[in-house]
Image 1 (cartoon, rainbow, N blue to C red):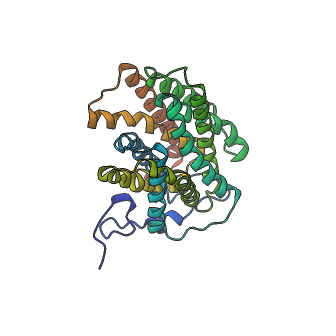
Image 2 (image 1 turned 90 degrees about the horizontal axis):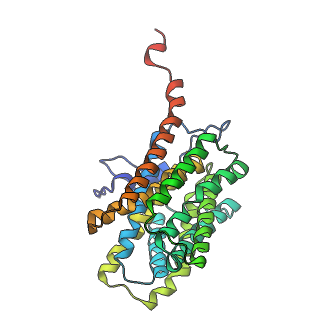
Image 3 (image 1 turned 180 degrees about the vertical axis):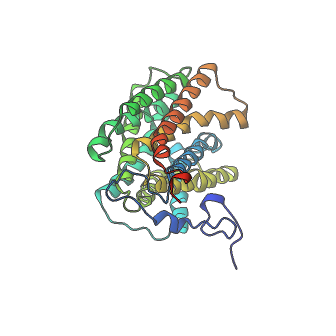
Length: 327
């Protein structure tokens, strides 16, 4: 019996959408002479779309996590365990190579999740989010050395504008207190940067295994805390959404996109996550963001949009027009 349920962009095989993620994820058409170039088959718009969807799914985490009454590490563990199972069901048997990039990606993944959760306990959520998204700065420095992806002056300008926008966005909630928590936030930003770098290193392979192994590590660390505060039925419902959609599907899309976008480009687009988070809170809880948050959000969105538009112009201008093909 053919499966009739369609989960839009992530169904294993849907007769309506004709999408096969298992096959699509492993296909690669990179230009070997220019590893950083976007392949023709994937296309820049599709890579950016996957990253925007990833950021949107990630942004729902704050609202969903607030709906689960359990230890934060337990939530992280259950969410990652469910995501790991989903990855196995959708993508099949993982190829564990044990490479430095694969292991480094999995450790960075688990470290990012655990450090961020811990940071939110010892400092404000705004501080934790802002410090985690200092990752573009580290990638701008390390990407040139480790990935041979040059950081252009326009990239540095975008980073500066985005950081300013983020500061304005969280201005009403930032605090100088909680040195230990802020230190954990800085470390989460560094591990988040290395996650993108290690995933990008696997652009010629299949980077989703790093996310899979990272989920396993996070589950091992977090699940023991589940026995301290067992969620109720409603909590388990939200945990299932967190594990499947918010984390599982998002990292399947991210693993596909990171093979066709530079690490810096990916992390700059993913900064949409904390900007979109208050949107869900406003829509479902009625908590409106303050004026500084609106100004900061507009600055971040404008900077990211402008950068991607300007980056696409050379590609558009070099494309042959229909009338130039002769005849």
